[in-house]
Length: 150
Image 1 (spheres, rainbow, N blue to C red):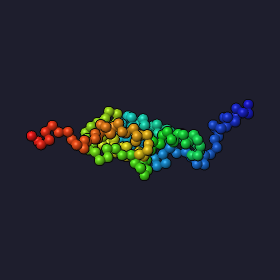
Image 2: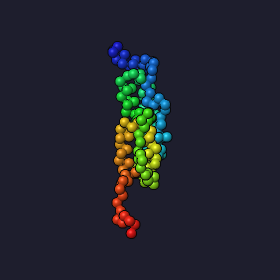
Image 3: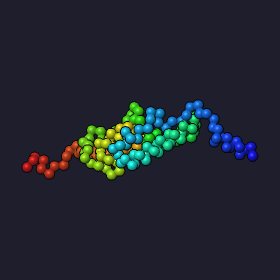
Image 4: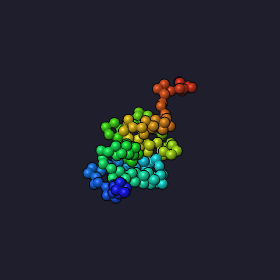
């Protein structure tokens, strides 16, 4: 029927996109951002996922609802940008760089990684747990068994 032919035409002869959707306008940054947190296989899987998504969204108009929804889901993990208010971790604290957190890497790498996220992002907010391990709060009045050193 004609109706069936029109459905086929939409997928075979799509209307040219004037302003294509883009997940990462400055490029995918998975490797540079997450290198300290994931092993090579996990990084490769993330890159593949980000690249596949970036290629897929090019068929959508940038102002479409589908584009907005997909970019919202993938921007934080594929191309985080800190903006004017970067995420901070272990501010004014002593960092134990030798501590390694399973599935996240060493503390200094994690601190460097979260700095690439905006402070208001969910990824930044979730970094608080790692902060407990990497930079415990030092007591302002330390406990001392022998305050005079005797």
